[in-house]
Image (cartoon, rainbow, N blue to C red; front, side, top):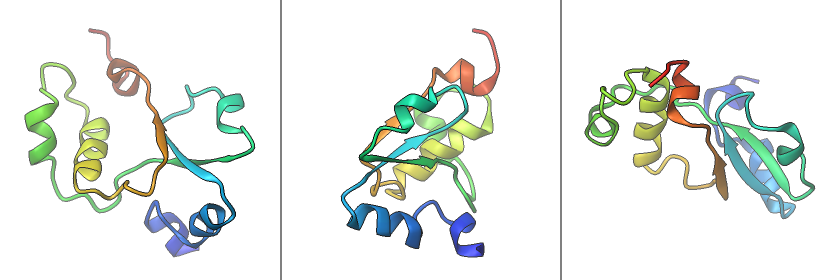
Length: 102
């Protein structure tokens, strides 16, 4: 069980991909479940486990736009090519992810 929750890519996901399913990343409950339940898709809740910092993401995602660490960490994780296994993403607007109003 530890491997399943410690990294976004795991044995269950690899088996789904081998069966021809497409991993689709999503960030929160605002993504309609009907979209994530399409037959060929396998939803993957994106997160950034063990991320050390957001120095690269800070360059591209200004703190003026969003100071929330969650989207910054996801961007940093993605820029390290750690989500290259995903076939696509469903992402809400930044202010929805941060819970802030711009």
